[in-house]
Image 1 (tube, rainbow, N blue to C red):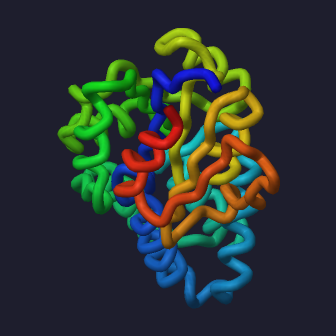
Image 2 (image 1 turned 30 degrees about the horizontal axis):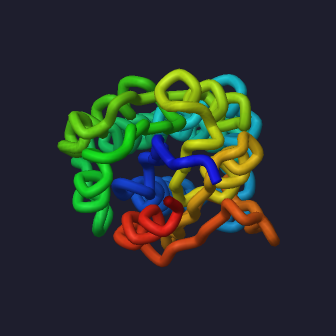
Length: 232
């Protein structure tokens, strides 16, 4: 078995809380439009807008805010009050200014692995926002490299682990998204480690692989050092 030299970490909802703030903002959004549309229909229209706009705006708070504005215009047939648009924009700015809240075991796990492995943060989202969150997290100095990408694909993992490590077959990727963190890393030849988070975005759902030797699922990030110790 190839010796493990490099560990890739997802950021949002792996190292720090993220999706919870999106859900709280979506609840506020629904309240603003409660007199115009029922919640279930609004959620479906917003999700459709997010899916439709990923290719234009990418991942992150700014794209989410624009999708909320677009949805508000659509569900009110263009009659959404200007004050509602202003409140949606204010909610987006509040999300961008929200302090970072590390998840349990995040700091201890990164600190434990940093001396012996090359650590690479691989995340999707807005460049400025992800850089802000990493700086505020206090974890930045422990990473050897940071890659902020538009999508996480097998090609992205292969290229990233070749650039900053010793290749995908000697790398491990850990994250809370089966679709983005685990499955494409496995396809690139790496280990893929799934650490569930209580809240996950609908567009990140995927089934776990079956019978894949390099796939592992943990209860929380604190179990990662012990797992890695068994990989050799």
